[in-house]
Amino acid sequence: MSNTEKETYINEAENAILHTYNRFQVVFDHGKGMYLYDTDGKEYLDFASGIGVQALGYGDEAYNTALKNQIDKLMHTSNLYYNVPIIRAAEKALKASGMHRIFFTNSGAEAIEGAIKAAKKYAYTRDGHNGHEIIAMKHSFHGRTLGSLSVTGNPHYQEPFGPLIPGISFADFNDFASVESLVTDKTCAIILETVQGEGGIYPADPEFLRRVRSLCDQKDILFIMDEIQCGMGRTGEMYAWQNYGVCPDIMCTAKAFGCGVPVGAFLMNEKVAKRTLQPGDHGTTYGGNPFVGVAVSAVFDRFEELQLIEHVKEVAPYLIEKLDELVAKYPMLTARRGMGLMQGLVCEVPVGQVAAKALEQGLIIITAGSDVLRFLPPLIMEKAHVDEMIEKLSKVLDENFM
Image (cartoon, rainbow, N blue to C red; front, side, top):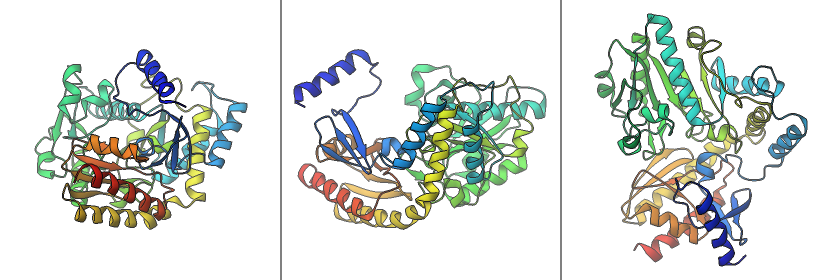
């Protein structure tokens, strides 16, 4: 394919699709394992996994076969009826999380929306009135719908779309005193990402999580954890909060939950389930249809068959070691932070330029915040892929930023 043909595709997209993304100048065609291939046939090592979605990499045969079989059987019936695939998916998700009830959505943002509604309904049932408030975290990211945007701690994203949901206040992440100072008798929930993603790859401090959990128990406030990016095995446990031994009341998941099929969910414990959303309070046309049920079920099956949690624990230390070596070697890289296969490098040169130059070298990395290079490889990553990534990224830094 010539550059002219590639440019034709890009021009067609720009003329048809609303320009809400500044896309890289590449048209991807297919993938295999850890690699993506563009319409010219060029190979790219993927250390972004579709922003944390493709945990199984590309072309997993068992996963693909499960989806193909379900397409020929039944795609959709609506939630007026039961279907077996979503029942099996629910069983596996609840077993993995230790939660008690689940609601399937089409996306992570919708999972956040449902969690907000569940928390407000819980407090309404308890108190007999509305007007309850939520504490969220600065520099957080929970989505771009009006509800999820309301609890996203970044004014830049919020300003054009106000007024948003009232009664939202923002605390400093990992600062318990900041959280505690915002609690009132109207507070119904505290929401946070166990590891902040878009905000710059900040893991929660263990003592911070424990104290927030204790505060919620004392005040009958619901603790909502957003595991959309950091969940599904990425940190070395199925959900990042399981590294801390601190359990949420409501948990949101998506991205690798479906490994490419658009599906999310919010899960809750029995205490919340008994006093929250009832028939008529919430709904979805597509959420939980047979097709996405098979996808979720196949993801959990493949995690078990490939022993991906154990694999992440094995390979993540090697990635961390090699990233730390880059920090020691290059003056523009000032710090590394993260958990498992969710890592970030703080960078003093424009991170967007680094990501663009990496793409030219056949390496896909993305950014987080204004100064972080973000690494979210598929969980099937091997140490050899780390070595290949380090070689390509080092070449980018040596040739363009030294």
